[in-house]
Image (spheres, helix red, strand yellow):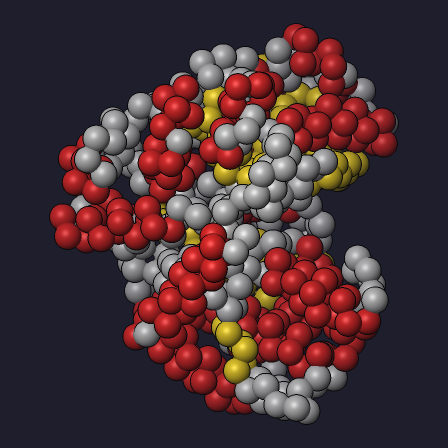
Length: 562
C-alpha cells in the first residue's frame, strides 16, 4: 500500500487518453481505485483529411492531419471539468500521465511552437500534425523496406521484418522529399505525446517507447544507421537530427507543471508529470495485466494488440518488440489491425445512414440485434478487414478491403456481421503468428468502446480464436493506465508508487464480463476461416499487386480529376 498524500488526505492522479477524435480526462483515487470523474473533449478540427483549414486547399489521398491546438483544449477544458465533476481539490492531485495514438508526429521550432501555428507555414500541409493513420508515405516505406532487406539491416528483426508507413521515418522523409522548406524550418519532429508533456512541464523529454516501436531505436543499437538512409535516399541528413538520441522510460517523471499551466488548470505546480506514453501500451497495466500469456486488445478506431514475454523473439508479422517497452522486465510485443471502429463507422454512415436516413449512432443498435440473429456461416459472406490497409501481419497500407460472397439475397445485417467476423479472423491470424513463433497465449483481455458495446463482437473473438475473452470493469482503460504512470511519476514519497508491479496489483480493475468459446460454433468458423485465410494469402501475399494496382489507379484518377 502506498503512503498517504503530503497532507494525509485523498491521493488523486490524472490520466489523459488522447484518441483519434477526442481526449478523455480521468481522475483516479489511489486509495480506493475508484474512477472519480471522466471528462471528454472532442477535437474541434477532428481529422483533417480532405481540405487544409488555413486555405481550403484539397489534400492528397491517404492524408490524415490534425491541429495541435486541439490537444491543448483537452487539457484546458477537460481537467477543470473533471475536477469540478469529481469534487476534487487541485491540491489532492499528485501526478499526471498521458497516452497518445502513435505514431502521431508534428514539426516544431526550438521553443516547441508547432510550425502550423506560424503564419508563414499554415498553408503547408507538412507543417501540421501527421496522425497515426496518415498513409501517404507508403512509397517511402516501400523504398526503406526494399533497401533494408537488401542490406540485411539488423533493426528489421525488431520491427516484424518491415517498416510501416504509419511510423516516424517514412513520415519524416516524406516531408524532406515534398517540402524541404518545412523540413529545414523545424528544429524537431516530435511524437505528439512528447509535445504535450513539453507544454505541461516546459521540458522536452522524449519517450523511449515511441522511439523503440515507431523509430526502430534500441538501447543497444541506437537508431538505424546513416548509411542505411543514405542508400535509400541519398542526401537525407542524420536520422537523429530531428528526433534526438536521448529517450526516457515509461513511468519516469518528466518534470512538474509549469506554474502558469498549473494555475490555468487549477492544480498545484508540484504535480509530477510522467514521460509520455502510447494509448495501447498503457492499457496493459491499466487492465491489470502483468504476466505473459495474455493477449491484450485495445479496440477503438483501430486495434492494437499487446503481448509481454520474458524472451525476445524476432518474428515477422508484428509491428515491434522492445525490451521494457510496455512493462519493465519484459519484452513488449505489438501487433494490430488498422481499421475497426473506422470500418464500422464507414458502414453506418455510407451505407446504412445514407440509405435509411439514420444519423449518428442511431443505426447501430438495430443492426447489432439483426446481426446477432444470423447463425455462423449462414450469410455466405466473408470480408478482409483492410479498409485502412493491413497493419499486421502483412504490414501493407496499400491493401484495401474486400467483401466476397455477396448475392442478391445478402442483407445489410449479413454484411455488417461479415465485417465483425473479419476483425475476429484477422485477430486469429495474429494470434496464430505469435503461437507459431513460440509465444504461448491462453486468454484475451479486450478493452475499449467496442469491447463494452458489442457483446456480439466479443463472442465472435472467443469463438474464432478459441480463447476466452475477458472485459475489465472500466470504460477508460487507457486513461486508467496513463493515470497509473502518473502515480509512478509522483513516487511513494508523495503518495504514489515506486514499483509498477505494486501499482498494477493495487489498482487492477474488476472483471465486467467473460466470454467462453462455443464448441457449437467453432467448427463452422474454422471452415469460414479457411476461406478467409486463403483470400488473405492470395490477395495480400501472392497477388498483392492486384489491390496495389487499384490503389494506384485511384490516386492517378484523383490527381487528374480532383
